[in-house]
Length: 383
Length: 54
Image 1 (tube, rainbow over the protein chains, first blue to last red):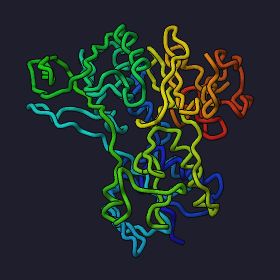
Image 2 (cartoon, rainbow over the protein chains, first blue to last red):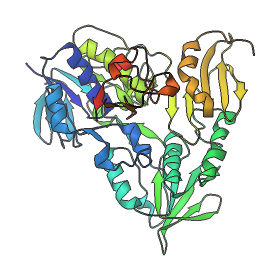
Image 3 (spheres, helix red, strand yellow):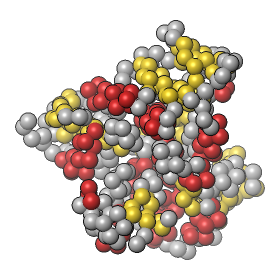
Image 4 (cartoon, each protein chain N blue to C red):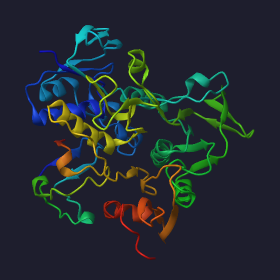
């Protein structure tokens, strides 16, 4: 019997297998990954310094132990060249692998913004545990770090690095922190608490050049400003990995196009996680992955199950000023309302019918996340 | 007493310490935490993920 083959050993790939094994211990499963196959928590990459963890310390379960626990065939350090849909097989650096059904969980690549200068190629992105190991090696005792991108990951790294005693500059062309998820009044709450840790915010500009300097690098910003840094980190967003699917002729858009059953345009091929576009939406972060993995595991076990996403707030791990946000679409009709502000803000997004469809909780209000999630979809109480 | 870690986000639950701020007393065993409890860091429900012994 040909196995279910899963591509990718991140949270999405391992979660779908873990969920499948809760239902079916016998169905053959193979996992193919270009990485080591060690299981780790990706969200911890941006707050591991404060926890005193190096790359090895972040590994929760070694690859061999995962293979044993889950009863799977694990092919590590294996690149997939192509998917042959007609013969249902993969062409890989470990030879041909036949599949009965295929699950693509390849994740996303860091977006790289073109930068000039003789040290442009030294800019680091931290998107997996191998990147993190390199980052920690290079970080050493470097005093100053420049971060390109003041979004969720940029802010988490800024908090983590600043708390560990590094001088951090954050450069972002946007107007305030995490502007893609949060309205201005909420985003600005992060400014002072992180500045108090030593974060130097540079909004409304971007990095034009990175050049070698006597010690480390010299950055030239679009507004003409110059600053020095021992290390430059880029955290400007992710782009779903769709090339393999695209070359196989599967429907792709921003991500691999799948329906509510996580099924692609080929009935034997599924996708989830950061590489997938589910019902028209790329849904990064961990909670959508967990819900998708559970639904897909049922479908793979023979019980067709669409994924249903509840309200899934995103937690921003900035201990200097914690944030939980349930964002709304950029073109959502309605408005943000301030409900409380004392050492942070509590804001609700009310739609045209005065129902709560999003929220932001910062500082002490972040703890009310679960309470707020229950109110989503309900009419807002009068202030 | 054991220490557990959320496999999704790395959150640590130490049975000896409990989580007084969430109303879970020190010394509460993992098994005794209500099924509707959610990981305070990533929001994944207890029933929905596995905690591993560290």
